[in-house]
Length: 214
Image: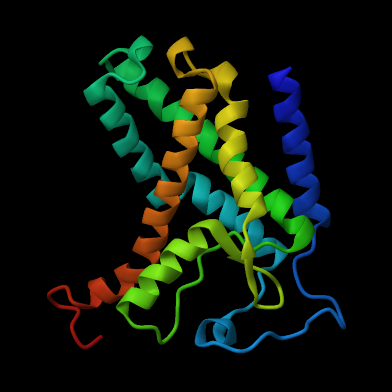
C-alpha cells in the first residue's frame, strides 16, 4: 500500500516537473506592492527546478549534512536496530538520503503545478532581525511567479509525506505516526538552518582572513 502511494507521489511529482507552471503567463501577473526582495525576484524556470532537486538531494551541502546526521545517529544509536557500526552508519545515511530525495521531488513536482518556488531567495536591504524573520518565513512560505510570498503547500506535503511514506524503509522503532511527526519537525528545523546558511554565509565569508574587501 505504501509502496503504491510512493509510486503515485513520484508520478505526480514527475508530471508536475514536466507539465507544471514554471513562469508567469501573459496577463497573469498582478504585481503586489514592491519590496527590495520582490524587486530582485526572478521566477524559477523548469531547468532551475530540476537543478534544485539534484542540488538539494545530492549536492555537497546535502551530502555533508547526511554525514553529520548519520554520525549523530551512530553516537546515540538511533534507531537502535542499526547499532553503532559502520554498517549502521551506512543504513542511517541511506535512509536519510532516500527520504530527502523523495521529499525534494514531491516539493518541486507538486509546486510546479501552481508555481511554488522551492528555492530560498536571499533578502535585500533588510536589517539583521528582518533577515532572520525572512529566513524563518521562507521556511514555511515560498515565492510565486508574481513575486508574492504564500504558504509553501508543496513543501509541507513533501516534508511530511516523505517521512510517512518511507516507513517501509525504516526499522520498527522508527515507524508509526509519532516518529514520523518528529522527523517532520526536524525536517523543517533543517530547512530553517539551511536557509540561514544561504542568507548569512556570503556575508560571513567576506569577513574571513584574506577575503576582506572582496
